[in-house]
Length: 271
Image 1 (cartoon, rainbow, N blue to C red):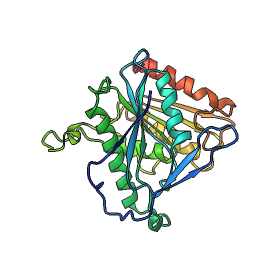
Image 2: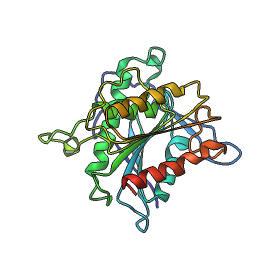
Image 3: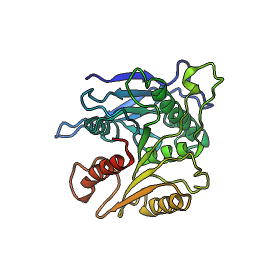
């Protein structure tokens, strides 16, 4: 089944940064022929929708946010590969290619960058819910999964999500953007986690115990904060486990996390 690509915004995306550099893609596909494309200077955010096969569909959907340090989007390893795994579980997946820091902002990584990507994340979840009827999904079973910076992004989304504006002229903006569940894989955890309120859904967290880019202490702190707030949380630390293992197809203990995540989603009733 071919994927559907949709622009997140009908017109110019909101925000204050100037995105003037052309979008670039580096193809790091290896000898195994598994696609490994990395996008940078993304100024036109999109979602690529991989619908679950009708005979497998559970009615659930997950929006996928690849990592890349807000400078890049690792669209295959942490995006489309993940969507295909979700499709095997009967879950429709929407891979978000969100805006990344333009070259002029990469050294400082201003707050404007985070605000623009957060706006894209909100919009992506709303857009999936807006099309729920057309895509045969349950708008109350829409989750998120994020890797590295994508994990940071969906955590920030969960902390500031809203229930939509029923008076909005744009019907997409009437949809809520809080995820019904969040899956965070080696996430970059922001320093402040005080806004984890009752609208934050259950979270599944995975980290490598030897990760030096997103150390496991962040995942431990997040899990502890969630438990204290009464939010269901499950944490798995893997040793050995460095950064960027994706679905764990290269082997080792980390290859078990997709199966553990599947079990978790079944226990929640998502599958």
